[in-house]
Length: 463
Image (cartoon, rainbow, N blue to C red):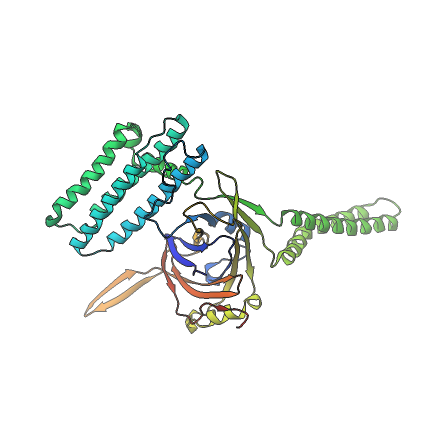
């Protein structure tokens, strides 16, 4: 079982990634400890609203060997397979090309030595040109297939230019490496001219940075069809909720009607007292019906899964994996002992009154095998903490310091800390736990710090 990774995504979101093999099962539990001073709770942020607005789930094919085009050797031949095979293989090539390029760019920018940096980048440029040549070796004559090719070719050409311009702008600069820099500039100019010669983008689109960027995002999504799986979400409790609401309404109505009939038999004729009494009964019913229904429904759904994601290949329509999801606020008494022990390891000043929000996802791979070249899929969960900032203060007070006879001051911001316990488990009862401390303010996540823990992989039954 590979460990799940947690990384920051954007200013106010983090990403959790897990890798699964065919027919593998993994369970993921997240326990959020949210300080009461943040104002988050069932009355201010319901589970349903947070799930639909701020929790996103994605699943796609994955391979560690990002530098190998994971496609059949002659994927660009129209005579090989059907149209869906061509588009699928073309998108696989584009997907792996983008992942490999992004990963290599990040690694290159970490190199501080100038000579080593340009040697690495020159090799990357040569490798990139070879992959683009392989892509363009065959242009399908069929108009439908040609549109798929042009979308991928346009996007990868633009992505290549942007990636190497980023390297040139952000990497170390030296007059001794002028020749290597000119070679990289030449590659960017060639790709720009290539797109212009093929008339891939209109002059109006090129003149507006927002339009060209958004167009390339669209082409990226089109290039992920068949690689990033299509998701369908089912509400597992919709029918049960209707049944509970109908049953409670029937019981309340039966009770009210019995009182009404008793009142009618007690009063021989219609009077103001009877009318007032009946009005009071119906008013009480309307006042407490929703409260009673909400209370009983919360008790019934406690501990039950609420949603299910079904992932399928958008081209073949084959089901590949499923995710069953729980999300609810829990009381301290429902917190597992091993999670409570991790939370108790906090320093005394950090042990504040808090709301506990529990997220659970049971991920199961249905497919027995994947497309050629792939042995794993990657699930990614993105949690946006923007709703958590609704009641936070942007800044609070000023800090005064003295230097000799001079007094200075500066504004200080108020920060908040969330504690998050991640629990990963597979069908063999192997379990991994890790506590994270998330420091944030109103505008961004400042730091996500994994806390030291002796908890590791183990058989949960033995513990």
